[in-house]
Length: 160
Image 1 (cartoon, helix red, strand yellow):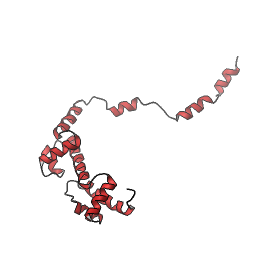
Image 2: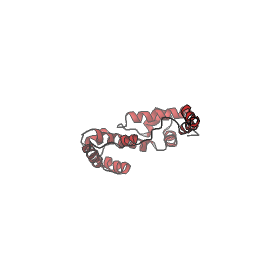
Image 3: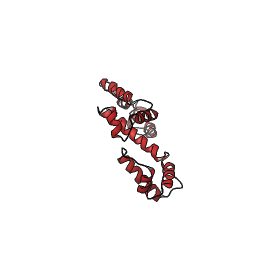
Image 4: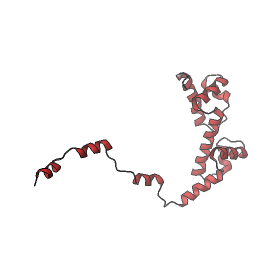
């Protein structure tokens, strides 16, 4: 990003925001370049430089993220999820899903259902919060206060 102007970055973000808002739509580089008001070649090169991924790979990632959310939060059939997230082929959806997540869509859904069956289990975030040390002040402040003599410690020293 060091070589890119703030104006170009704003234009790239505009295209990225459009992909995020409607990831189920087709977003060829030419359409994204049009949104950014730059040439297709310049857009593709600049997008990858700015965000670390080519535009198409970024779009695939967003689609898979949305599919994972739908698998976890709904009971929609996997086929419906694939089509609603912008895939034209179930085979391509399944292969790309596995490539990105390392699991099949059905495996993700089974995992979520197994976790829901253990509803009495305490979430890890709650456990870690319960075992967190009670630091209401900085350690250095606590040490400083312990080293300063108090009236009580002074009385103990002077009283026989």
